[in-house]
Image (cartoon, rainbow, N blue to C red; front, side):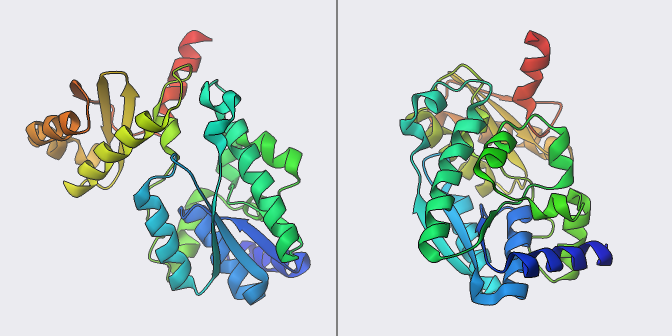
Length: 267
């Protein structure tokens, strides 16, 4: 892994200056950390803020950037104004990332930086991620892929570098909680955010609220399932407080992109 880290550093040296599409998740935080170590003020992180970003993730992005001593911009994006995104087709992420990369490209030029980079890692290439096409179209580079770093390797290197987010659970935009074909609205995103924040307040670390109309399907990590069952009354109360009529606990536990399972059924 030390060779891959050195390769990553060399990539940033060759780029000269970068704007990092930085969500506050582990991968983009690691990219911002290494870029800042190599390039200093010539590395800038940009966090896109919209209703699909939970308040918790925005706060964490700001906290992490401060700890890294990194330059950090927070910019509003407007993917919800795009009917292609709001309709929530199976390639919704393409529309979201297209808006993100239009924003990062504009800010990169304004700041006089050379390249826009993201936090895509090698493992991401094996999942259904329409946003990767948006990155290709926008000319965005993925230095973790270029350095052949997997998610596990990023976690280990982040731990070695002393980053307190090395074991941070995977995060995704709130829109990923809404089944394809169900329109994405500000009201639905806010409802999901309220319930997820309540579940974090109950001490759960890995949380997803999958939105199915009046029903909230709650996913927690398998290690937290038994505790979630013990607290089922509190989960129901939190769900009703967020506006749901029914609250269920998914016994399979949290898994990345569980709504993509519907694509395999329908396909």
